[in-house]
Image (cartoon, rainbow, N blue to C red; front, side, top):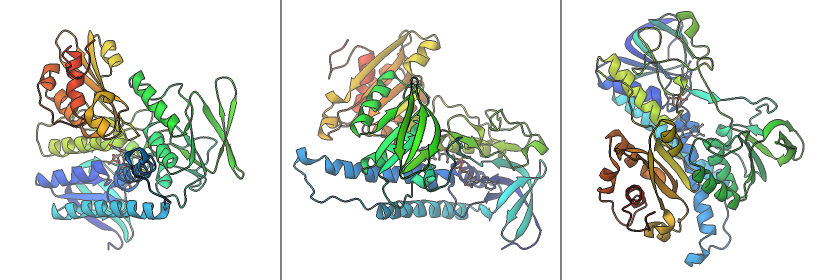
Length: 471
Ligand SMILES: Cc1cc2nc3c(=O)[nH]c(=O)nc-3n(C[C@H](O)[C@H](O)[C@H](O)COP(=O)(O)OP(=O)(O)OC[C@H]3O[C@@H](n4cnc5c(N)ncnc54)[C@H](O)[C@@H]3O)c2cc1C
């Protein structure tokens, strides 16, 4: 433990130990740098490992399992007296989080990264101060990487109390399954966690300001997603602005729709209306690190901020607020600091919504491709025609390939269906390699797998599909 005021030095200091920060620290250490990683929270891993990607996917899997067992009678499987014990489920999820965050600590130690526990603030372009349990620690550095992440955006009329009005973090550790839950915001976090509770038996309603679901994606995606949410009994109120919460037993969420006011009963309200960057309290203004009007730190493709020697990565720089984007930026920052010719130059950042069915996409949507002046060719393969999908009882959804009609270059893939998250990486690789539709079409895919739909969709775009009729 550090006591009083201590002065230290290192080559690279990283602020924040989420997916951006710990990856940057490890990569910088691998490249021979003397690295200090500063984290204010008890556990390493940031939002993703503690209250984001991993715990949400654990609960999604558990609720999927309950739902699948309930619906397995036509497979000859019935389970009498199925019960869901939420505290046990949460405990299981917490065990996964503990293992992973412990794993990050182990990797930092083994790579020679020194971890300092405390809140950091830059005091100049070469020094920072950390408020630790034992007092202030001053650190001098040659380069700093800011990886302080983001937090949920507050919503007027819905003061967060952590019990009735909650954010996604509390939704991952509720003490019991609520009878009625209103989710405000139909972004991926709201859709994923709303689906979890619907599958666990909660009456879930989603209130969304925008008039459409997932407007940036394909209209067919929104249709497939909307249909399934309805099947799960989720009330979807699009085009409604959430106004206020009226406490009571139960409380009521009041929202303004296009024509009338909506009132929905709720025992718990989960607000998931977006995230804001953790860029305050870091001393950025004092040293001249430029941010945009929302507070995201401005960086170039080398992850350099407006101040030489200060880098920023992950959610705090905006763009896609996703862990794998943070990983990539982390590696770029560490490599640039080590003098390598690195830059963030990806052909596409894949994204997944882990709903049921999953939605995954990379590259351009059909509409984006048209807006960029491409003469577009598309091919769609429905899972209803896939033997693997039938054998999994998962025939909902499709894969759509988007290509340039003249050059036949692959421009994007969008997929809806069971397990599509597992092969969107393949589509990303194809885009990264500058693949033509034919390259994917000529790639032998194992049969029977859901990934064959990718090959079939591309072949459909070329007018060569075999397992469905070509248009
Ligand atoms: C419910 C939910 C589900 C998600 N699911 C997915 C998913 O499936 N896939 C995906 O790719 N992404 C997902 N995300 C997003 C993902 O979690 C983030 O994109 C990712 O965590 C960003 O990483 P980061 O390193 O930039 O920041 P963070 O993970 O936010 O980490 C920042 C760290 O910095 C620390 N810190 C902040 N300020 C200071 C300071 N002054 N001094 C010291 N330490 C500081 C914080 O305590 C924190 O540990 C999800 C998010 C949520 C909320």
